[in-house]
Amino acid sequence: MRLCFGSYFAVLVSCKAVNVDNKQLCEVLLHSVAPNFEFTFSGQENADRVREDASSKLLRCEQNLSKDVTDPARHANPQEVAAYFKDNVLKLLDSNLFKQIVLALRDIIASDTPEEVGKKIYGIYDDTKVEMVSGTTKMGLSSQTEFSFHTFLAGVFLYVVTNTENRSGKKTIKLITQEYVFSFTSHIEEIILLVNDGSNRVNLVSGLMENRTDAEFAEDVAGYVVDRIKQLAPLPKQDDSLLVTLLAEANGKCLYCGDYLGIPKRGKIPVKKCEIVHLKLSPDEAESYENAVALCANECAPLVPTMSSEEIKDLLERKQRCADLQAFLDRISGIKFQNQIEAVLREVHKTKNAKGLEPTNIKDLVEIERKIHEPFLKDKINASMARLYKTVKETCSRLEQEIGFDTNIFGELMKSASILLESGIQQKPDIVDPQEYIMDLLVEKLYSQVGQRYKDACEIIVGYLVKRCDLFNENAKQS
Image (cartoon, rainbow, N blue to C red; front, top):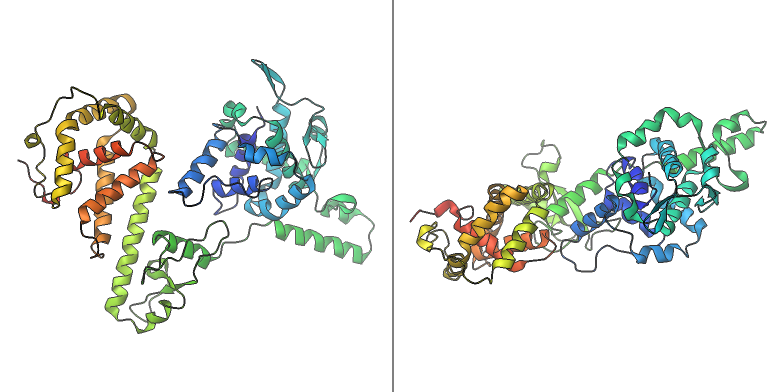
């Protein structure tokens, strides 16, 4: 087995607290040595997806840590890093699994024997200082039974960041599952977690057996309790969790006036004061997620008591459309299409300007005269498909066999998106060309999903789905 950031991170992921996601845990770890490091840049589209993708690649050992992390780690103060772990990392982990984390990491370190691979030597020698806060060696760690948890985590993290290559753990990462970590549960009595560091470090069990005055004993117990409380992951506040959900569904906007409120992330508060309001159609109706909306605290929320039942129904319908759209986006992000879509777009992009492509008789395709109402959009799609329809169809058919890309499923997903978008656009009379607006949104969604590449091919694929009758087909007819 190999100790690297990915294997270290995998152990912690298996023991994280409820409602903590991988990207959050990953960033908090890296900020211990590089407080200003970010996976994304200001204004980047689909930033949350980028953060998730970057942390996943680190977890799978598919890329090494950035020098923006490793360089400052070499100059970090170990005691400050340990203090940071105590204040920021422990609360993201399940306090009931601290001992399993220690035992799993110790097992990985013990199994990481030196080995020559090509011109490099990977592995840890017995006299290597592998816990860099206390300076404990690999050999010393193997027989150690008392651990200060946050110090141990910070010390091993510093070693991982400054002395290992993450890609070296590709084989190991497959072995570090939750079952692997939990397998150490039967051995947790073999180690003791200390309450404090330094000369006054205390263990509650050993403290009970010592000859101490009542005052000293009470002080030790109080210290133990306080430390355990600090280690416990705080229970999520219902309102905070609900607020994030509601704002995320509404794209960070007030559902009534449309003003931007922001979406709380990583401890940040919304950019504008907002409030959860429960819209009730009857006085005895219970408060729930279904009737909760996020509104401007000072402008829109005070208006709710004076709203008519029709206005309340309209707001609830808007909320439902937002929830439906978010559910769709969650659905599409849960399907592993990215590599398959990218392969299709890459092929289309290559052939777009190729000479000698067999033309298509538009009359042989689905007539879009009644399907597309906007002349410019209709002409644009027809012009593209007259030349590329057969090529795109052949490409999709071939790749369906080669990589399992299911054009039908993808088409249905795009169709679902267009229907959901259309229901929202009906509420926006300022949009002059709804179908073109929807198509542009679909292209942008596809474009962002594949890392903002092959935009020309994204337009072609969406046009292909229109002609193939997956999109805008409620008024379509065969010629």
